[in-house]
Image: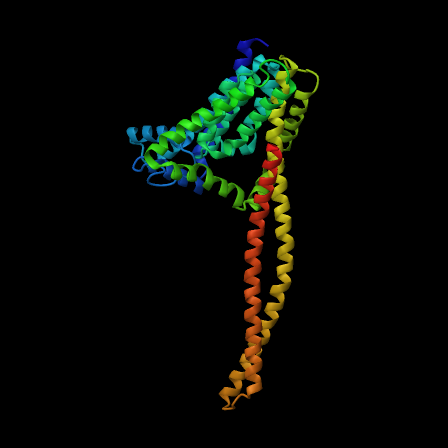
Length: 404
């Protein structure tokens, strides 16, 4: 296919995405998180992060998103229209990135394959709904996608810098670091014994660390090492390892897969094609396999998260069934207590003096119910702690296996 025809077709697909996305920007209601992220961006105008407040995420994405908001203020659009301008800017940034990366992929894949993949992406419902929201994850994803492109080209430094910058947008970009790092590690193992076999992996690692170290060092000058370390690594890891998002994570995967089954099926099949004999690839086998390792690691992380969510939800469901039996017995005890109190009230209304044995029986029943309530509260606390502990244990076990 001629370059001009390819770019016209690609531009039409990206234009379709941008048209749909701008309609979404103007018509869909803003989610609660979008107001929270906009508030975090606005906070940067009057306070010094890490010194005056611990930021919710790393700050590069917030600083990038502050530019459209500043333009909106300069134009006098008003607070609401400032937010709409930011969302529209996000959509435009995504569209331009898709066009640029798809055009660069012509050096590796058949043009028709690229256009088909782009067509699948621009009508994928979850992508359409999330790519223009006021959050920083999409910015990190764009940088991670750029890192994957330079991985495919074998440029370790550029790939490392991009995924390192992605980490400075959000700590969730550690997935991109792991995926690209695994690909270069695979290449290092495949070429062991040859001169310079570990150079790409070392270059990648140093390139990832460079922007992170500069960012960390700059903010420690104004806020101190402890505060920056706590916000960048400790707090975020506690949220990732100890906060139980299992039910929400499973619900997300169920709805996105049920609405986009073809997208996910063909995506997995595409990874398989990278490992198969060259069909549409134009690069050596090493390049395709390096990229396939990157894709497989990302897929494995997603599958692991989904599996962990499903397991945690099943455990909670089983535990809840057991607690139901305890609560049923407690309900029966409360009903009996209600009857005893009603009988005593009737005797007192008639001027009768209740006998001591009935008072003792009532005290004993109250003690039993109090003990049951204490056990139920303790069991509920154990169940919540066990769920969070299970998720954290699975994360640490996975990371230890990965690192070992």
